[in-house]
Structures are given as C-alpha cells and as structure tokens.
Length: 122
Image (tube, rainbow, N blue to C red; front, side):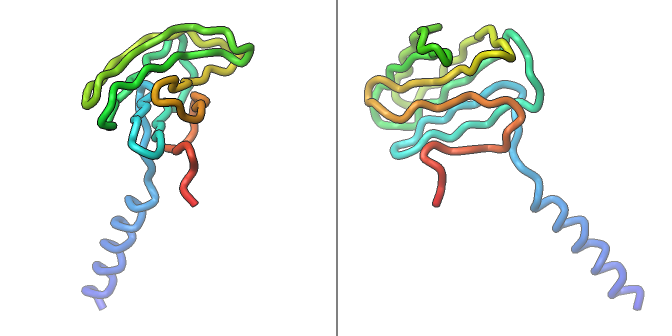
C-alpha cells in the first residue's frame, strides 16, 4: 500500500512538470530554415530586450516595424550568430519582426504568450 502511494505521488510530481511551458525575460526569436520560433516574456516592459538567433545557413536581414508599418530598426544576423536589440514598446501599438532577405512571414511580438512558431505547427 505504501509503495503504491509513493509511486502515485512521484508520478504526480513528474506529470506536473510535463505541462510546464517555455518562458523568457526577453523576446527570444529563433530563425530556423522553415519557421521562426518565439519565446515571449511574461509581462510588459519598456524598453524590452529582443534576442535574434540565426540558425539558418544564410545571413538574415530584417527589420522591426510597428502596426502603422513604420520602420523602427534594421538588423543583419550572420549564419549561426546571435544579436540583441532593445526597443521601446507601447501598450497601444504592436511590434513585428519582418525578415527581408531571405523573405519570410512577419512575426508579431506578443507579451505573455506561450512559445509560438510562424508558421504554426499543424
């Protein structure tokens, strides 16, 4: 009886860790060959750090724009490298990362969201 209770308790602890999800203190944007993965911070901060990791085989050139399509900052990240930037966010506007070369779908940076990918997994 005690062995069954202990086993049940241990399985309960292990299963609670399985439901945890990834979070970060800054936006972590990972560029992969066919998708972009984003980890977002829990709470709104301004200015906010954004880390871009290029795990593709080519140099990536991109820019950050707001919801009015106004360019905030350009950046280039060599293959296998990581760059970080700091941007001022406002709660009233959205910020997007737009890869220009090679071109890819824009990625909205959303606070407090679980890890997400563009395009989303099917």
